[in-house]
Image (cartoon, rainbow, N blue to C red; front, side, top):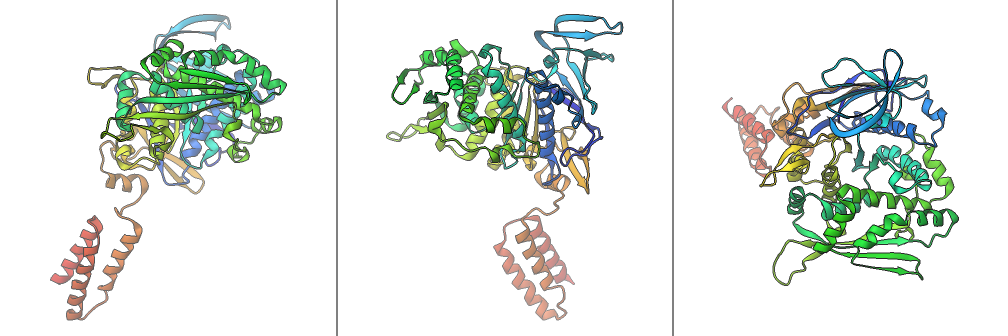
Amino acid sequence: MKLLRLKILGEDFRSLTANVDYEFNDTLEDSKLSTKVFAGLNGSGKSNFLELLAEIFYYLERVKLQDTPKSYIENKNFGFEIEYILPKTKKGFDYIEKIESREVLYLDKPFEKDVHVNIKKDLEGFLEMSYSLAGEDNFSVVEENFEQFLPLKIIAYTSGQNELLSNPFIRLRYHYFTEMVNSKYKDCNRRLFFLDAESNYSIFVANMLLGKTAPLNYIKSIFRIEDLHSFRITFNYKHNTQEALKILEKKQDLLNPLKACATTWRDDTNAKCLILDFYITEAVHQAFQYYYKTAFQLFQTFYELQSLNLLIEKQAVRKFVVNASKAINITDELSKSDPSDLIFRIEKIQIKKQKIEEGKKDTLYYKSLSDGEHQLNEVIGSVMMMEDDGCLFLMDEPDTHFNPKWRAKMITILNKVSGKEYDAHGNPENIRKHELIMTTHSPFIISDNQKDNVYKFIRKDKTLKLENPKHETYGTSITFLMKQIFDRDITISDYANNELIDLKREIQNINDTALLAEKIDEIEERLMGFGESIEKFDLYNYLSQVKKK
């Protein structure tokens, strides 16, 4: 997946200007994960761009759901144009193609080349998707089954208070829930995933059980752990509404493989809950491998079971969510359920620490890890488990809880866990064809990307421009990037810098030579209380010049 162009039709989308072509670098690389870095000052529109992409793919996903009304599909208040490249694939696909003679052809073949996809939804309700294979100029219109020309999966994450990014994912999850009520698990096709606290546990457990050896060992070395020790799954069936009983009975096929993998399980008829305990051994690893094959398949099962928690939501809440305005922060309107009321939950996750001194405890609860470690698991772990090409990741400030060392290594870590194959030393030899679009204020992350993949958001009044930096950003020093990207030409904090400015002012209006010399000595002594910086050096230099005069 690689985004090429995006245009809003009609009215502005939040702070993003409409009827402007936002164009992006089209270079495809085999040796590095495709990343787009959105940088700029707060309020410049970086997060809004991710929200727009989420709303577009939410719309395209809604179009194919059975319960979507025609009025929503035509939606004359929402228009866009989007172009992107999907990687070639060996998997076959079916679609209907319109040719000049207007005949309709049914095709079944793999993408033998990368595919250039062009989608337009105008303000009159007309939706059209067309495609061309790499190296070809002619675009063919796709009439039906166009979902096969969408990104394989779309995964979003936000670390801050900007929960608007989650809106389309929450709404779609409620639509998925409605679809789930009337279908078997095997027929459900989830494309959009939003990563929250629940998914944090799911990602960690899935990767620890089924992650590929080389990237998993690398992640374990960062966390300084050996393996997953144990965890529990609790399935609560005390909710006895007719709807709940019908769905829970239908979804038993999701629980049976988990019961087969569990070390022990018991059905507590008094508490009306099923408790599955997993104590991790090689046999348990093999059982999960047999039933789920990949970390993502296990994660997807957890995600599906967590959707059952929507059963405890009132019908009025469900109706509100699916019809909520784009401007409303849905998470603010949802009540937080007591964990004991949830139908499905993963809990009591314990991990084995690396061997330490004798007598020291060698296990710890996953919950006891730091915010940065939880964020690392969610961000890096989600990329690690997506083994098939063609996914799109939308990540809003995914590094906020990282220490400077992790921020400096983030792009390296992402590439380390994105290999299709690994050499004997655990280094990736072939990187997956995903697109990761992230907002950041970290010059470390910018310094690990070429300027063609860095987009500075510049807002002037109501006009927004996206510009690549004038100078190369890859390998550029932090100080230079602070000036180039964030318009900051001092290297220290404002409080300390203002004090240095005040010290300089103290001698500027002294005409008496003896008094001036005395004052310079005093300032030089006070400078001993400042750490090393360019600004401190500049003041020393200024004092030296005054002495000479």
